Image 1: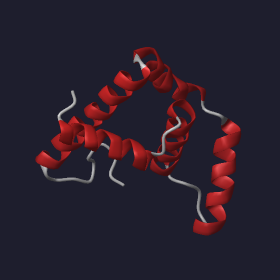
Image 2 (image 1 turned 180 degrees about the horizontal axis):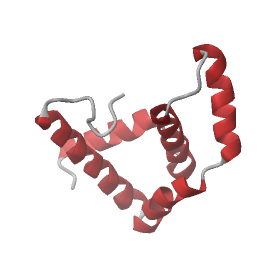
Image 3 (image 1 turned 90 degrees about the horizontal axis):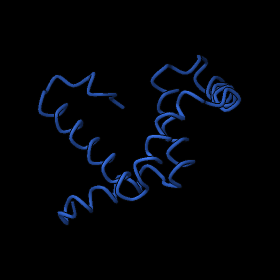
Image 4 (image 1 turned 120 degrees about the horizontal axis):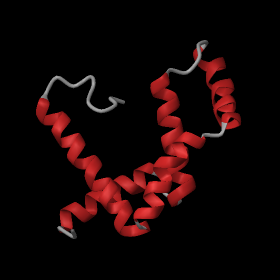
Length: 105
């Protein structure tokens, strides 16, 4: 997974990813409220060290190395998404794309 377009050389791809990210945030605000979305972002500062330790413990035997910062960030993001909004990432992706295709904004 490329984070914030860091591995993309094409400016159009990076721009599209930022626009899509904005659409995701707008969808979450519309569905759950601004305060809930702000709490979601603030929750990253209050991560559960036990969850991270468990993740690393299960990741290490398979890869023989500690998880990268990008892997930890993805894990935290997915975990928080499920915890706060009760959404699986694939479901959120589908909901946002469906909304964009319908023009419901």
